[in-house]
Image (tube, rainbow, N blue to C red):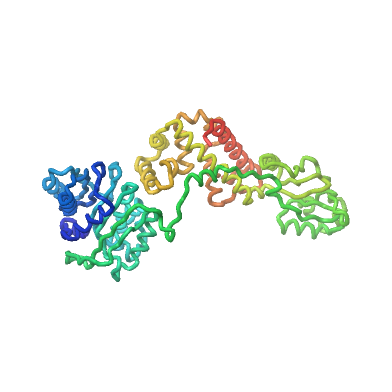
Length: 503
């Protein structure tokens, strides 16, 4: 194996090890004419030569192949050595930013050995940004650079492909935990075989034996991963979650009686943070009216019957059957409402009840439909999402990073749009022709589209939806008025998207 601390010195894979690797590479059958091989870090070409020997023995044509190497001198050397083979040799870093090389049915390599803890923090951080298998902070003692080689290679492996690496001895004292760690980190692939008989390392500077590791696409091991049905997830998320006032109100609210002491009632209202409460007859429980904390302020003697019971006005009542939209509209006008007829109050609903879990579920379903609708609309219109994001001020490097993240999740995502956040989808729509089609601008919505994403963040992280009981506020706190405007804009967008059958 090659030592990254001495990049100019390239070791050689012993002939018997190379031949065994190739035998395993083609264990399920010889390569077809249209299948390709990738040689990451080709070095001096020992593995290319082993494939050539195999093809000669079995009277096969050498497959179309691509070889990558960071040492420019070796690129020229291998080109000259194998100039008669259909081998495309490129001066590229396998762990760097690669052009689109397509998929390969076979991948064969001798990855470099380097404990992550021995690499500089800057190098680890750069690798960790691009590879799930690499830890930027405090890597474990068995974490090695070859893990990134596995991840990069498996990401380029065709569905029925096979990858063979010569790797550190997983059964050695230093590497005893590498097998489960490798399985955990590469959950969408299956380690088909690990040779338990180490091959003695030919390199004096490396105190590790080596083994041959074969990896192939397969069903994820249930011990390490669960299969994800993307279509099922998407279908589940499109189910609406409708709620009404009965779902968020305080049922059977605390009530008082005409002969209750005003001081005790005031303290109860303060303790429970209530603005008001119903007053009922002690025997029949019929609702007589309402007592408010404001009216009791400063009163310390007497009973509620001494002029403190107010008539319940119709404007303060909402039917038990009221929808969430109707309830929200009423709470925009007042801090609380009583639910039910005036002689049979069933509950009380306040502006702070808009922070209840039922509202989070209700909004989550709407946002899920909204995101799915935006993605489908962007696809249908053929919007160039990369250009749109850059027009929105996103750098090319950040746009490119989004594509790289998709390649890591391609097993459960249709395309890059499926891994973009709502904030990205909003920017894409704002900077494309689709904006006018669905009325997605501030003049139509009445709000900045970014505030829809702000509310989505609060829903996702279970942060308060309503920050203040006031309708307006001079601070950046979200008021009931702000919430209502965003909610109405979200509903308007959903209606437009659904009318065009994008959800």
